[in-house]
Image (cartoon, rainbow, N blue to C red; front, side, top):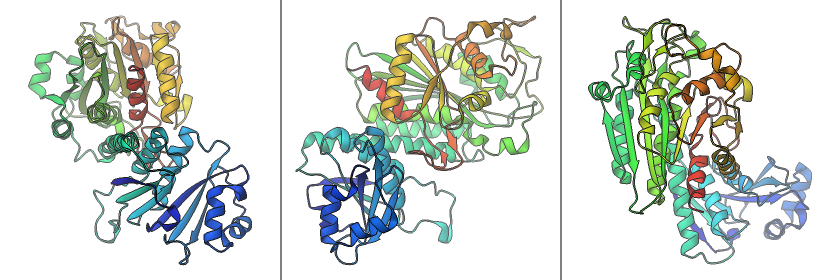
Length: 490
């Protein structure tokens, strides 16, 4: 998508769609509404009154330009009581881009000309224009995807404004890449293919990338990852991406992603309907890849690593079983309780590897537990952290990004659930506090690292559009991670 800035009068915009955001405080006196009403011969205010449009958040109204505007259609979107809030501005652009799909060009009227506002609008436009069309054929292929967006500003833009738009576009594209990965079905997105795509994207972004095959993983010493892979006919992959700027003394942040390209539940088989969307169980891997690519494209002066452990969890003749005991990369032995709790096993070996990189901060993303969905619903991720200051910083980053998290406790009282009679650890506890005991299991493999575990099981994949996130894969977590990285530079 091409996004440009223009100081031209938006009323003379030649785009097919002209989108204007309107706050809820006295719509009739809004300067842009008054200007549009004058251009349209007084018909706009009359139509607003007839339709009950009051600028409330979520309201929308569409009118034909009828030759009085250069644009064919005018779209007014309600911005509510806080029209200049960051989340409101981003969502305005997302909604406008969604409404303009099927038209080649969109014009947005900016409420401010500062780089931050323009960044939010550009980011929203890229995110809102997302569609997953890889498998559509014939008449189902969108004829005219949104290709061009003009953001109208009140004064001639300079380099800071143009740079902000360029960076926001790059970030939005990284989120959309993650969405593509999550939406791709498991017959095409195997662990091998995920490794290939990561390597290809890394090369384009100037990121180092090492992809380990099955023999390479065995040499690395990752028995828990190999245990989960035993029932599969597909090889596993272990991916290590590195964005390393020339800046001396840059903080080192390592992101780890769960990469289960499909989860049948293994021998503890899932019900059929619970398997339908299990292509999304590599959502943490997609987020991790997107974060590293974003750090590189934004040229952040921070050393950022992305570590992904990828396989599927299948029921082949050599599948791992409840009651089996395996060692781990860290040396601790693990008794298998439920083969459908495979994500924490592949993460355990990946986290142990990540700790050896001596990070200043260690962060994992994983579609880990249904228990997190039960606790927090579909739209909010669970946040666990063993460092109070880091936890607060991540919450602030989430608030700026428009993504929702809730910090949950690493409740030591539940640690007894992981005690095993025959091994160092059981890998699951009881159903009560299941998202917490999963985090406690992972905590056993992070040593003294400052660490955050993000259970994104809910918001990684949605059944319908919600806020800035589309139906299907969302790329949830990338925006917050980038905000967190930026906060380290403050």
